[in-house]
Image (cartoon, rainbow, N blue to C red):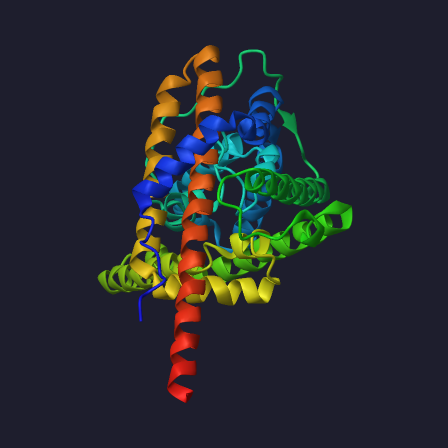
Length: 368
């Protein structure tokens, strides 16, 4: 029997098609560009003062728990902790939570982000200190002074509100990019679109936000053994602790890469194929399992492109005009990568359906 399975669209073909499609629909970069412009122009929501308060409480607890001689011996540790806390406090901007969705476009301004297009550099390597010291886009000269948020409940409220806003914006971005692209013959008609209308859109937001939340919890749980090993290495400094940290670190990195790659297409299964979330998870796992190496290749190439151009944008963005160019260029590239993922997924889905149909036909022939 002649195979109905078409030739695979490779990573380079998908990336080329993504760059071409966004060139024909440049308005798709509006949402990621607007988010970065907001971060560039609005004042930093700083928590430096709140972190200093926590540091003072921690020092008071140490002073109460240890004798004066032992506390004095910890002077170097306290000095390092103060310097690290000051550095972290100067970098944290609560407004960057607007980029906090796994499905959002990577920001050229946010220091910490966890998007799937930068999962290797930002979700796997950066948390264990393996991120590259890349140049950053300068702040706008007319940017107002930082706004200190000194109340813990206010910090939590801002983070939750901005995280929810990031889920809504990411859903709008994904759905907008999915509409009007070529090759939509197999999709449902507008009358059959379960995500149409305010209620359908809200249902889509809830599903994608729930997926992002579940994924964040899973990633956090996977990092706990690595954090414990790092703590043991920090306090003991022994060779055995270093070997244990290396073993646990290698295993954690591999499990993280496998897990995040396996669920890479969940949003496409939900958005494009209109599957329930649980079925989308299973569908993504099954497709990646049968196309593991090509999918890992796609993920790695996209991550390398985004990381390499992050360095380019940092060099370009050392002036206000250069910063604007970097924001627009990063938005263009991120949108092209999203459309490349759509193209790759649709080809993968077509091949998957053809394989299932072929298997069903063979089963029918065998029964006859």
